[in-house]
Image 1 (cartoon, one colour):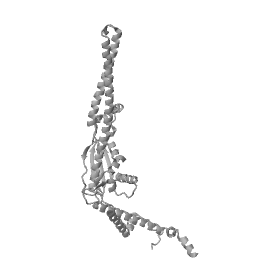
Image 2 (tube, one colour):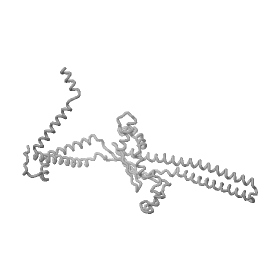
Image 3 (cartoon, helix red, strand yellow):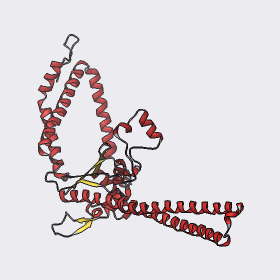
Length: 369
């Protein structure tokens, strides 16, 4: 038992504290062994993680306008450009930020969960199942399975982007290397499919509207020309009458106006037909995902180093705390005795409450009866 310290004893200095830690080397070793045991259990029970990476560049459509570098920043010219509506990209849905949110969207990830992949759990080749089934979600409720699958997919994927280069990076982590690469490439396919569906649909709607307007403008032009022709047929000598000259000028202006509108709409229709084919703003894949050869987890060298460092730090903390506590107990024996007794009493009360089962009282009463 440690002898109580007196007032004249030296205080707990750093050297004495370090000496107390060294004297408790068994505590440090025990913490190191426990940390190593936890690391071994983690390697056994936590499955390996393979990471596949893919990247693509967002392309702006021909209708988008990008300012030069000198005008896109601050300053007077940049302010004027902002007031005129000239941003870095005319269509916000063509920015890398949009594609990053698209990959995280519920719609795209639901399609990804319902996509079929080769089953990595079976050695038989050609067995394809949905990604939702590969995730092994233990619930029979279909909607709940999708909710859990979306959460797992959110944890397994990471998206980053760079505004300066319009580059979007995608990282997918799964238990199987082939599956990681295929999920990443399938995600890129779904992004391209979204572009084809949404942007082509938008261009088709614009083309359909312009076709109806061109037909209407053509009918108005034919009607204006027919009125003008009828005027000439009914008024052979219209130039000698000021009223007829004025009426002819009105008819000519109607023809010119409707002809100009018809030509303008016709040009817009031709442009829309080209945009429906060329203006899809498709992505350019920079790096397709390849099957990783080395797992992200476990990294045995890094795991060993972190286990040694972490276990040593924990051991030093426990041993250092024990040294401080021993010094305090030696200097304050009465307070330490009172604190120890209180802790023992509370521990006994808690243990007795847990040992006392709900039916124990009834059984005792039955035995007494």
